[in-house]
Image (cartoon, rainbow, N blue to C red):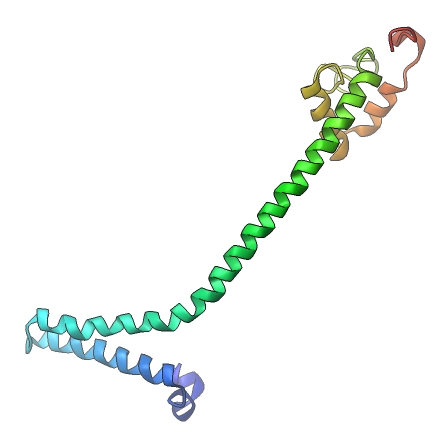
Length: 158
């Protein structure tokens, strides 16, 4: 950092001077410990100066705390949106069960359209079929299967 900013610019900031002092004290404690001049327990006082660096980051905690609160509010709003989407899916699934619940399965083959996996017979299948339609998974065949007439659908039954 000293090399990047230059000596004069680096020491113009109080935090940089503090960091330099702490790094110098840490280096001094390592050298004195290696030489064996002081007892290692007395050097722990110099090493505790590193805690001062945390003060620099505590100022930023307010910003991080504010960001986490905003994310919490956004997730709560997202939960409301998902609940609304679920309600819309539920309404259309019940409507699909009433309108297309008796359509014969497998009119266009076993793997396309209304089959044992995607149909409107039960609520869970209707919800999954609507999800499949919404995501674009073979929705045209499902639409064609729901347009069937007389031999595959009885007008009296629905």
